[in-house]
Length: 198
Image (cartoon, rainbow, N blue to C red; front, side, top):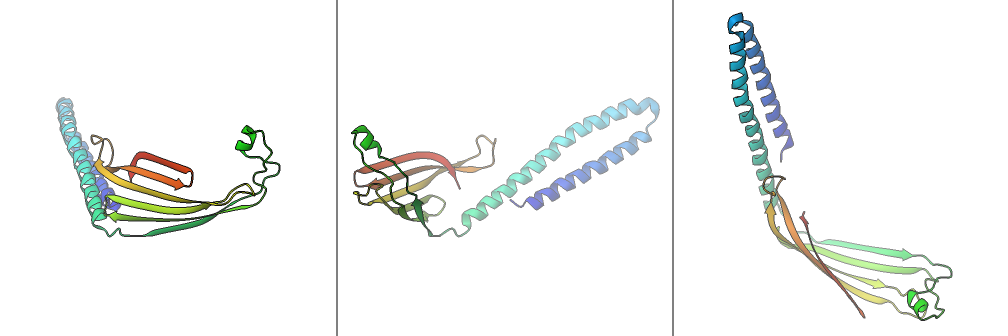
């Protein structure tokens, strides 16, 4: 939405209201005393009819500009491939043991060494304004010296379901459904959610 244009429309309405008020005051100043109350009531009634029309005009202009902005965004090129990578460092911990060792009443040191977790992720909107896909991988290190790293594969998607204004209470926005899954040896986690489509 072109905010500057909305501001101009608002200023124009404000200027029109100011000029109308000056004209009304001038008219009242020339009104005979015995007709003053009647003329003031007439001006007030006319103002009660005019102000709502002006407010509707401003709201209509705001909605029109919002529609123009949304249409421009929908037709704008959105193809992309987002590549993310990071390296998580987990520091060493003195005198720590794993939860499983506590349950088994065994002494098994955990986190005695620095751990490195490389991660890589990809994201793309494969269907314009409708579907985004994500995929990634990570190498989870073992916090035990006798353990070995565990590779993870992650997948996710966002699907835009519909647009809404919640009965004109809010500006138009999209609602999405999302799903994610994280797979590794002896490990599986997934989740679904609803949210705002950006």
